Image (tube, rainbow, N blue to C red):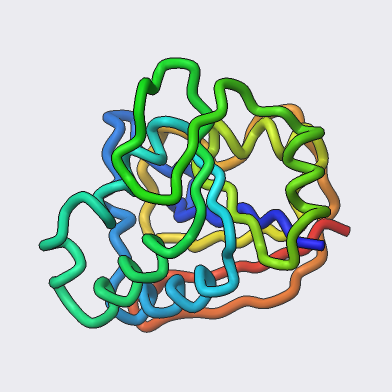
Length: 185
């Protein structure tokens, strides 16, 4: 059975984007990016909302992005090889390979997907992840904490949800970024 993992990069005060919708402050350095690449390797399917998909699609649509460094090249190869499901009622077409659109998030269907695979499933974006969190589907929680306080924006977790977690791993990077890995208790 596959595990559903929610991976997010957030500010110390818990935001994935700031109040202006920017996330440039969250760009990982080479050390952190390489670590995130290793987290991505066991993923067989990415689940995205429209905005996160449009953000991530550049790993396939902008060939120059992958050429910045060996680490970015590695991530682009990992990302392109994985199946992607985009949940959107407004997106007409996808621009990447191995990608399909679902019009609505169906917790029962995601549960069946988990049961039908041995590969990990990663859910990206706090808006879509909130549906999986509320449905009790998230097995693993991976948070990359950037050493910045942005004062507002889109939080990585939804309000009104309580989940007990067990700490599995933690790591501090030279840049001051911290990684926290939890498993649902």
